[in-house]
Amino acid sequence: MKSIRVAVAAAAVGMTLTACSSPMHAGAAAVVGNERISASQVNENTQVYVTALRNAKLDEQTKAALAGTTLEQAALQGTSASQLVLRNMVEVSAFRQLMARYNVQVSQTEIDNALKDPGQYPSAELRLLFSGVAPQNAREYGRVVVGVAKLQQQFGGESGQQRLLQEFSAFQPVFSPRYGVLNPQRSQENPAMFVDTGRFGKLTPPQQQQPQQQPQG
Image (cartoon, rainbow, N blue to C red; front, side):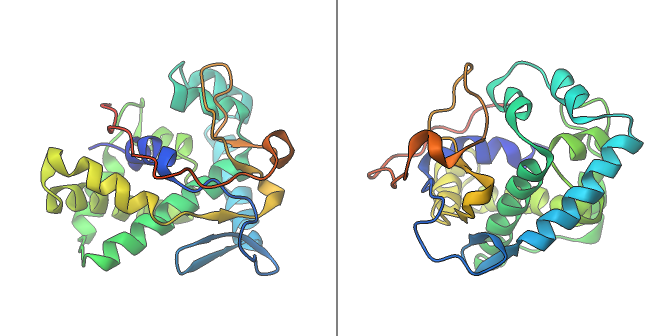
């Protein structure tokens, strides 16, 4: 089963890359559709996530070194633990709302099976850690992984990829400036998912940008 990271990597191109283009409530880290992610939630999840990394004998430097050389994996080298956790929380929030919109149901057994799948990593535990999933959020992440696959099938299977990306991109998350903004110019030389807001100034939405084809992985 593919990780939601595959869908997000392609969909991010069509997102509105904003830091503060709409009002942010005090204490908010991000606003995703109808959901608000608080800075305290991010901080709590980050603390648990870093502890999980240490328990797995993976510090952030080691995690980055093991991540590989693909653009998505290389992004970990320029992403702090809090940014990685926030990114995951935003993605899960957007897909959870999308699943609710289309009444996608996921069973506990399906979640169990998803959490046992190591994907491209040596173990299922490493898959969660490399995806920025704090342990207490594992089951919600598993639910979304299954839900994304069901959504794509509902949209037409392989031919439904583009619609899935379009639906996801429409959520246009807004981040607190303290975390930076999603990088609109990702490359092998500059792979980081987030960049400091000062690097690009105020970012504006792309003009009718078409989502890229979902990469295979």
